[in-house]
Length: 389
Image (cartoon, rainbow, N blue to C red):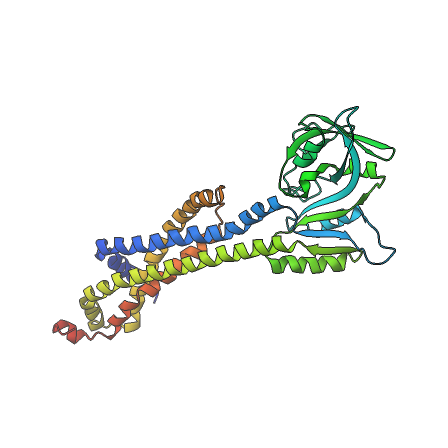
């Protein structure tokens, strides 16, 4: 058996090189199918990450708030809950943002009539490495951090009420006999309640409210499908029974539905591409089968077994699939980078898992497309030599 292997592969090489024109057609069909399949599969895997990034702009999708059941219920949570959430979500890329909301009087400068505004104090840098704690994109950046005058972000409507407050102005905040100041770092408009708020640091809000180490709620951004997020919420409720954990349903459902639609569309397209590639290869192999009747008849006449003859042709098809898959998958991954930039505005990251999957699929398509060669198994040598087959 070991002595026949060199001969076996020599015959396979001869079969592949026998008709170079048809060989090029088959390789082009398989390569094009592999390239499109690799590009679509890579985009499908990358889409989940991109959608997660895009949806984070809309804010948190899970809220951890105090239980408000019974006369003894608390209106705030201990800040240690946020640190506990960081520990629970470690490794899942969960963004965590503790918030404290209070109502204060604000004035842009001395002598101006103060205006009642809602201050939203939020902590930063509490999330795992690589995850921004602020769902709005670190809204207090751009101003140097001064403990006495921390940066703040003012909503557009709040800024209008405060005598058309401008970036860089000093804002004075008072709650009872407590006073604090912040420097306006940005004025934003998002079309929500944030437009009426002043966003600043959690420390300043706690000092104004005289609530050290307390927060009103904790905002979480949990990536994943709706079922995965709901499972995380259920687990979180068991681990933090003193808090009310609930999801922002419209965000979780919208993200899940959008990803399922994109994933379904790309999966269906990949299936169509593979079927069309198989049909193209099958059409080319039908002509190959017609041309090789004499070769098969000769192989059988000198004692070649039918199984051995079929193995030769399947080995030829698998080799073509391997070559086309290796080249086509690499081209497809490069293509997905350009497609990702066109679709999401950011180049897709090549996923290495896609490469071996696409190569394997291309080999399967090549072997499936070689089905017409099975007709050669029924050829009788005598019929071939008499010109009857």
